[in-house]
Length: 117
Image 1 (cartoon, rainbow, N blue to C red):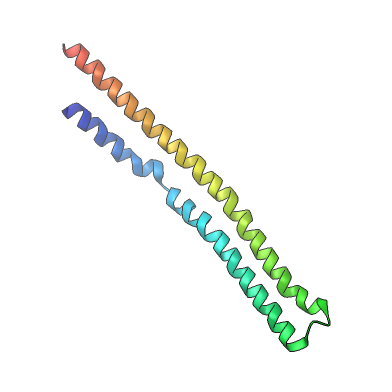
Image 2 (image 1 turned 90 degrees about the vertical axis):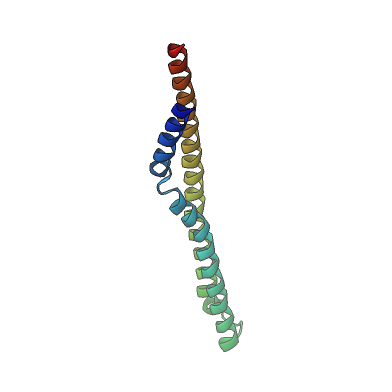
């Protein structure tokens, strides 16, 4: 029992090093599409402002806001998708490492108990 507690404590002590940066990746992955959406909204607001001032007669006037909306959406998704994939990959890797450490801790504890007997 005390040996298992010591081993579990050692594993818990290593967790912050393994999980370092994962929360930042999760935040970046969640915020990137929101920033893209914000750009989409501002681009569409700009487009409607141009329509209000100049009407719909000249598509070139409206294209700037529409372009801004599309580009910001694209960039937000282009950032979010790989970041979310990387976060998932690294999170799973950490989970596997922790599982391996726990498995080895139990094996070590069992080996020590067998030698003791």
